Image (cartoon, rainbow, N blue to C red; front, side, top):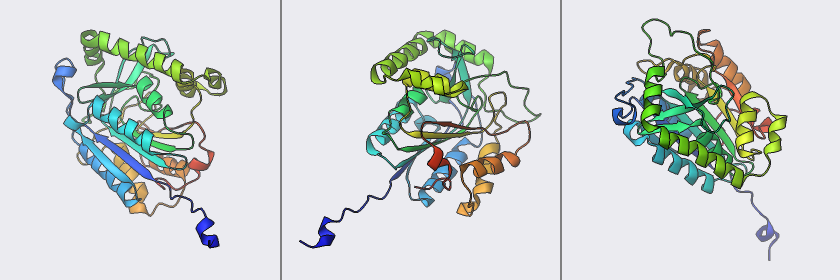
Length: 301
């Protein structure tokens, strides 16, 4: 037998992307509010184009297709398919929302949400699904929505600039939606907490974390994948919609410059932030083992 036959060739890392953009939501699921936006579908398609250009297999969920079931199915499929060294890119452009915290894991007594077409995805659900990926998988999340600084905590945002559309579900709508569907959302929070306690046995890992990271790790234990979240704004700010892209995604595309950007994730975040007004300052938030991940060029499979 030749020596070459005994040589093990390292598998090339694989990249999968799931890109969501919602220009409205179902009024039936949101107390009569349909939350019209203009640029979110453009955002999702543009992020998918970046993913494909970097060698990822990308799936796009636009407005009516961006349902709770479709998002969860996409994340769970990726979690089964990816292993050590692989990359999962998850992008969301749409409204951010809030609801009362039923499982007492939030300091502000509210759970932050992504407003999907047929109902909200809770921050607890998002972090639980991310924690189910294999050890060493790199997970990159871009959230172009309000309450997106960590997707885990809230400070009352200031009023948006005149004549601009914030990606924010109004508080009155949030209260009405919760009142109409509280049994469903309360059960979700309870079920996710119970599943996390059953699946993970290292909640003391939270002692090594601060702020939102502590809330996430307290829920699910130690994060085995490395998660990098770059958001559209700080927790006390709003992300603005646009005509062709959201303000955050538009600046991201400019900095990326069709792949000519040559820095790492920290530089990428800093340059995006520098191009936006003080009223909208993107946040960078990490969970799990990310030291090597952060040094890479963004979107590198």
